[in-house]
Image (cartoon, rainbow, N blue to C red; front, side, top):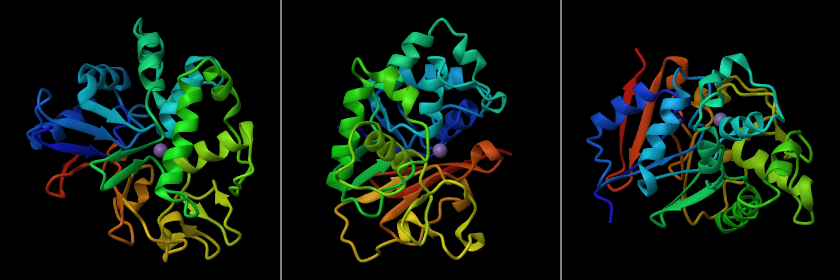
Length: 270
Ligand SMILES: [Mn+2]
């Protein structure tokens, strides 16, 4: 049993910020557990150091995959061009690249914590239950850990389909699950996933609704912990949805939730 469990928001290669946050939280790598909501790497100044540190925690570190983590995997296999702004070169040139790729491939899209929470990078698609989310996450993990992983990475990009149907199969099904779990912010008035808008809901066009405000009447079995949406600055409209991306890589803050006491610890980028 872990002494304490911390769930940290988007790290994005900001190793110095992560270490400052863990020190403030009195994190003990031998006795405590660290969870991360994804986007472990990408954009920040030390993605390689971040990956090495997190790997050193062994089983005391668990994460779900974010869009930046999947982007890195696709780039590492030559399926996408690295964006300069992602600052992935030291990671891509490291002799540890195969180990890091293998390590990342083991993480799921969704994971339960202490049977009270579920963490997923972008959010819970409003028309799925938590159990459905866990099942769809397992479908993707099975592919990502198996022989077809490169084909998945090579074919996952695209915006279609934008609406879920249980009848979806093969890549359209996989692509929707990955997009909903790692890229979703808003749904439009036809309940389609929107990929164009990333701003704060106060500034969003009227036809868009944040995923966590769609279908408010549904009953949730778990509180949803998510990242991805820095402009929310950790805010969401319900105590059932806990946003932890507070934009450290953009010069704001890095935030962790201590699961046992439900208090927040954060550090500023300065
Ligand atoms: Mn993200």
